[in-house]
Amino acid sequence: MRRYAALAALTGILVAGCTSGTSGGSGTTDASSGNSAGGTLRLLYDRTVTTWDPQRLAGGAESAVALRTFARTLTGYPAGADGRADRLAGDLATDTGSTPDGGRTWVFTLRIGPAWEDGTPVTCADVRYGIARAFARDQLTGGLPYPSALLDVPTQPDPRGAPVPVYPGPYATTDPTATAAFDSAVTCAGQTLTLRLRATEPDFPHILALPVFAAHRADHDRGAAGTLDVFSCGPYRLEAPWEPGSGGRFVRNPAWTAASDPLRRAAPEVVDLREGIPVATIASRLAEDKQPDDTAVSLADLPVSTQAALLADPAIAARVSTPASGLVELLQPNFASTAMGNRAVRVAFATATDRTAFAAAYGPRVFTPAYAVLPAAVPGHVDSNPLGVPEAGDPVAARAALVAAGIALPVAVRVAYRGSAVADSAFAALKAGWEEAGFAVTLEAVPDPYYATVSAPEAAARFDVFRASWYPDYPEGVAVIPELFDSRLNLTSAGAGQDLGSFSDPTVNAAIDTSQATLDPAARAAAWAAVDASLVTAGVAVPLGERHRFFVRGSGVTAYGENPALGGWPDLAAIVVRS
Image 1 (cartoon, rainbow, N blue to C red):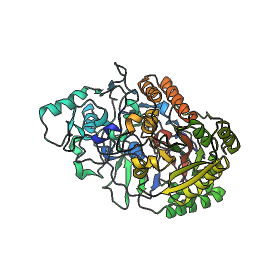
Image 2 (cartoon, one colour):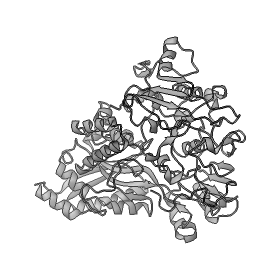
Image 3 (tube, rainbow, N blue to C red):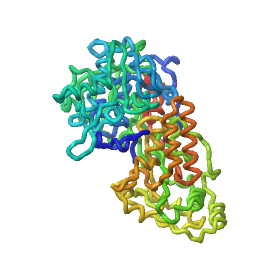
Image 4 (tube, rainbow, N blue to C red):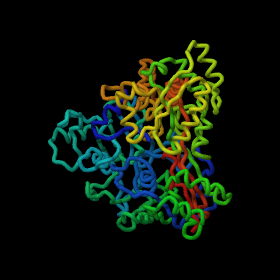
């Protein structure tokens, strides 16, 4: 049974996703289809890079860049649109591993050929050292918690009583027992790496594709001081030290060979990343398409405010891409509510939900209406409609169902959502359909910190429906459904966790356990799909839509693609530019 939420105390950070959209205009053109390698790819980024340390990266654009330029893990995804979860492959490893005991022990053979930028081969010890660094949360803060949460290293109480691994990472002087505990969980024998886990994890090869499991050279490790250091075993190296507020140039790693890397095409000779550029400036520069921005790509996910003008010009719109992000917006009815504790009321509420109006409030190509909790890139996502509800909802049918169930109208409901100007419009549009169906709706725009407010115990007595969203760390059902609907992970005296609706059902929990323990990938995906459909059918979840990203590229980008398994970000392993 997965316990990521319960293991959050191991690292003090949120795990297995974040709370906060199939490509809408571009596919991937193979770099071998007449496009020559070379040239400079320019990435225009609105944010400031906080770290390039793989053990400190926690998702987003920076992780997507790192994994395609200088950081390599045991497993990974092919370039561009081929990077689906079902195409997981070996990266530093020759394959996706084997397990002799149903998913608790995983064995990998390291590939011959990958090398660091100084020409030294990548060894099993380098992979092992990268994993060891992930335990040093006193120095390497902010990264993903999976090594310390999953590997079979004993824990002990910290001063607050929370369990933490006895192994503190490679920087601290440790007693032999603590070091032996890590040595037992992560072992090298020549090119063979063996990883032993606390519990069975059929999805572990996907977790190993996250940057927190990247290889790291011990003699190039400055610990907390090395936040922006880059020492590469990928196709690019950092030409000069990173300049905060400006950026840097990733140039060819002379020790890298295509034969040693099955995942990265690495066609551009240089990847130049400039940071801290306002989104309006990025949009303007790419719309003008002047050199050198004709070989640039927006690494910024451009906001709604910039999108209409770009889409209005057909020549610019042809260079726009709107891939699915993996973030699903949904509603979680409150099972502690008198109204929403009634299945007939929940289903009627879902039936009256106007997904078309919700998406329209955000503008074109921002949301794909959704009927599933699992996003499109996750195995188990099914483009079906369990309740048979039109995208615009059916208030007439919903009202009839309430009357037939003997429910007195109107049904008063208070809906909490994260306030913003566009969200106000979207929820006003939803309210119209709900009220036509016989609901008396009060909307409450909750300011930040939204999740702290709506997950608190008192929120269960205050609201009937909660807006929620979820983005998985990796493309598997276990990174979505348990985190939102497993009461054992979420419901405590301190609040509802991510299970905002206080949903608790032993049958669903048992189905989650079965899905997690299923070793065959196809069977596991089918099991998650069944759990997803059961939640939607019972009105436990009302999916609204999957958010899409919005990117623009220059006309000199001759092959382009995003990677669905990497959150839909531009995939530097696929892109080719005019040289």
